[in-house]
Length: 468
Image 1 (tube, helix red, strand yellow):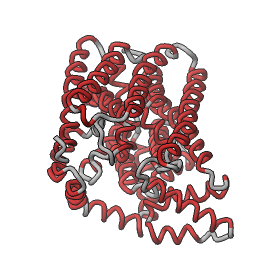
Image 2: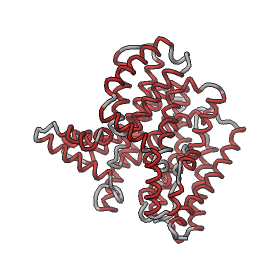
Image 3: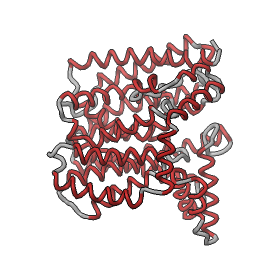
């Protein structure tokens, strides 16, 4: 079993990325990106794959305490540097410390500022007003921003530094969760991968809710896993994961649904080595009682609306995208999105002037495309070896959320895939730990497939707009 990320894979992934850039630059020369988007992509890809090998090798034999300290400090420093850089980079590019074509992020900022102003006047009922207007799924984050702005005098920069702190601590939680499930060496691989994952770093420099939401999702699964595996069985250990699960409903409805589905699935179907029958019954009763008490009103209505509108929402979204530029978008459906849900979305490495944020994140998406191989390998091995029931909480959360996304209007939206990324990395770390010479050939096949998919994706974007 491997206890590091091999240079064999990191070198090939980096080489593939440069091959993709060169091929798209030559084939679609008239639609090449601005130079700084290439730089962002190269830093993301080289930084992730080179240092994944470097740190998993360098840190594999240090003490648990030293590894945990290193993981948190390095993750925090990387994110802090990005927060400061991106703050001034966005000002230089857009005139404000927000990304291009900012929409939700600017709206969250405005709502947070308004809530903070009400709080300074002593109007604490403002939260119920926003809850009635926007519903639970949009109220959680803006309420959080409002309270934070109230404390830090509306400081955007301090808010993002706090995001960096949460994201760094999330890496530690991922390490602990993975170690509990797959052992120390695999946990260290997962910790390093999460420390370097470009998606996690990138969103610390934005005012979207993803950083906080992903942190809560990881905290929920980590605490729920601890509850199921631990011999300590008390009110606090039960209450914390349930509280985190219901908090997710105030950030994104489908994420809360995925959390509860994963928890129920793990309790019912997990191996007896993980969860004894006594704990199943007691925890199950607690969950049913609390769900029955709290799961009503606006939350229940939102869940019902999401489920009933899943097919119509996806069709409407694809038709809208078709009218906005890409005529091929109207053919998007679950049958097309589902097979590539682990690897999607694919990087935008050609110039689409209205998709600057996607171009900036081209390297981040490429990293996800490559790590998806190890995720799928890990899932296959767990099923093939009949070990899936021992890790059912992580697997059910990952799969249930991706299934919902595949049926939604956001099947190829990078932002909506993010809550699944920590758990995909955990399974990917297991897949990496199981690699041997026999399996290397399948990775090479995967890189060839990804190469042609990205070329085809670039053609799809340009041809759908009638530009080639």
